[in-house]
Every structure is written in structure tokens, then in C-alpha cells.
Image (cartoon, rainbow, N blue to C red; front, side, top):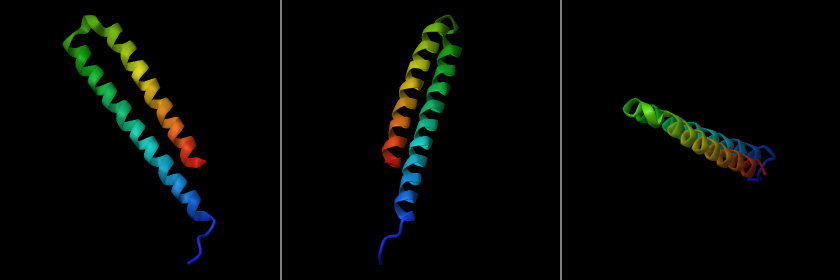
Length: 72
């Protein structure tokens, strides 16, 4: 059976979708853990928030890179 033109596009869509799902799960886990940490130590709010934002930005960057690789 000869491959069609749509097969590579569907594989790219699956790869991009998996990257987005992974990023969503990662950021959700960071947010939940940050809320737990803030509930335990409210005085450390600013440090926890800064660490959470940096980690979320790194996850978003990795997910964007994965999406670009999947689409190329």
C-alpha cells in the first residue's frame, strides 16, 4: 500500500497534540503544587510564585519546541 499525502500530516497532528497534553498536565501539576505550598507557608508566596512562573515558562518553551519539531 502506497502512503498518501495525509499520513505525515496526521502524525504531526498526533505529535503536536501529545506535546500540548504534556504541557497542560505539567503546568497543572505545578499550579496544584504551588497552591499546596502557599497554603502551608503563606509568607513564602512571592518565592513560590516566582518559581512557579519560571517552571511554567520552561514547560511552555519545551512544548512549543516539541510542536515545531512535530510539524516539521
